[in-house]
Length: 449
Image (cartoon, rainbow, N blue to C red; front, side, top):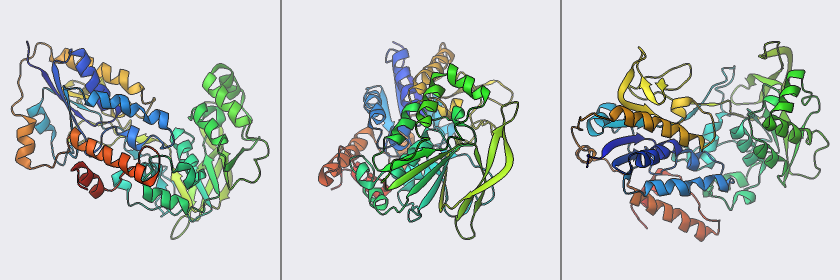
C-alpha cells in the first residue's frame, strides 16, 4: 500500500474542515491531515461569526466535529502561521499545504471621521458578542441612545438584531457572561440600518430580514418613499424569488411601527455615508441620498441629512489579509488561484500550495458553499500529487517539539468544550456559555479546575 498523503490545512473553519473531509473521502482514508489554527478552538466562523441566537446554523459544528474525530485527522490549536511556523516549515513536513484562513477584517468606507472613537468595524463587535478571545476585553459605548449600522447584508442584520434584543433574550445563548452584563446596561433605543442602494439590491436573506420584524421588544419601520422601485428593480423583484421575498417583507414595515416597544429599528435605503461627525468621538453621521444612474451605479444626489448617532458600526464587507510569502491580489483580497491551485505572478501554479474558502473566492456564499469549494481544491491537489514520489524532510512533531510550542490538541479542546457546557449549567444559561479570555480558555484546555 502506498504511503499516506500528508497534508497541512491552515485554518479550522468550515473551509478547512471540509477540505480535511474531502481529503479523507477522495483518498479512501489513505491520508493524514493536520489542521492548524492560531486559536485553541476549532470551527472558525461557525463559532465566532454565526450569531449566538442562530442555534440551527451553529449546529453545523456537530458535523464538523465528526470530521475532526476521524483517525486520519488531527487538530493543532494555538499554532500560528508566520509566528510559529513558516511556509518553508510546512513544505518540509508535508506533501501539500491548503490555506483556508478566511476573511478576517472589515473593508473600510474611506470617509472623513472613520477613525473617530465610536466608529467600529462590525467584525470587532461580532467577535465581542461571539466570544472571540481577541475581542474579549473590547468595550463599546452602549450608553448612547442612537446607533448606525452601515450595510444591509446578513452580518449587518445580525448586529442590528443583537442591539435591538434585551440581555434577557440572549441569556439562553452561548454569549459570554461579560457580554450579557454589558448588554444589560445598554441604553440604545434606536438603531438605523443603512444601505447605499435600494431594497431590491439588499444582500440579506428574507429569513434574516423577517426575524427583525418578529422581535418582541423592538418596532421596525422603512419609509414608503425608500420602497419605491425603479423599473429595473421592479423587474428584478418579479424575476428573482429572493428579491421578491425581501421586498414583500420590507413593504410590510412601511406602516405605523408597533407601539409600546422599548427599542426601534429604522431601515434606511438610498443613503451613503459621507462623513462621521465629531471631535473627540462620534457625535453624528452625515448621509448623502443616492440614486442609480443609467448604468446601474450608485451616485450621490447632493442632498444630505445628519443622524444624531453616538456609535457607528461598519458592515460593508469582509476581506482577507495576506499570508506571509503567499501570493496575494490586493484588488480582490484573495490569493490568485486556478481551482484552488495558487498561482505565481507569472500565472504558473505554485507547487504543493493550495487555497480553499473565502481566501480563495472572496467572502461569498453560505457556510455550506465551502464544501464544494474545498472538494474542488482537493481534487486538483491529489491530481497534482499523483505519480510524485518526493518525501517530507522532517515530521511536524519534531519541529513543534524543537520549538517548545504549547500546542492545543483535540483532546485539550474537548476539555474546554466541557468547561463551557459546565459553566452554562452552573449559571442556568442554556447549553453552553463561552469562555472568551485567553487565560481562561488555555486553563480549561489543560483541565485546570
